[in-house]
Length: 235
Image (cartoon, rainbow, N blue to C red; front, side, top):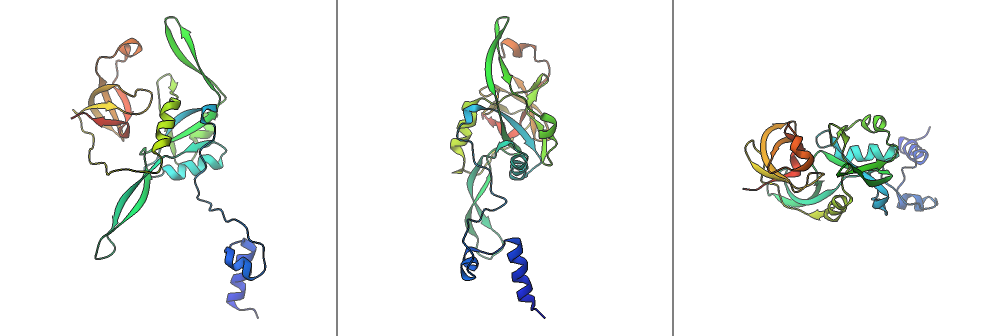
């Protein structure tokens, strides 16, 4: 009769769950161990993709990226390193921890070309790619895509690269929170640099009444809905 320890070793061997030291001890060749929860690598040629911002369920950005990567999409979850303290012991100890740089948002890229076309006297972006939106939005932790009434709005490549440079850098604690009546500036996305007043907060989105809009935005009768992490207070 085999022992429980022997049965456990046999089960671990069949599952390939031995560590590198255990494999060397029993004469098996060492192999690199890849964690199943490792985030996918950022593409070496981000300019070959057109990027969109997807909204996710709260605190599920990393899981959404893993699900998108397993489905065959190029996804990116920018994070920042912050100091947190543990309250499980008498004396508080601080340690580093990664958290999402864009709360409730992830970036996903699709192979394609983004060009400009003239429609009358206005230049508009034209996106050429076959995007399976039904399959993308069918992922468990994906809620929707950032866009307007006409459809999803691509994220400019320079904004993607700016977030990429901030990835895994040390960041401070966010002490400011949005409130109705605050004058804010959009710091990320297609409307970056626009200023306005918050007229409503709904489900993590800030509805803005923009100041001094011109061109196509002059016909914007409804408040512009922007994810709350995309705005900063102007005091």
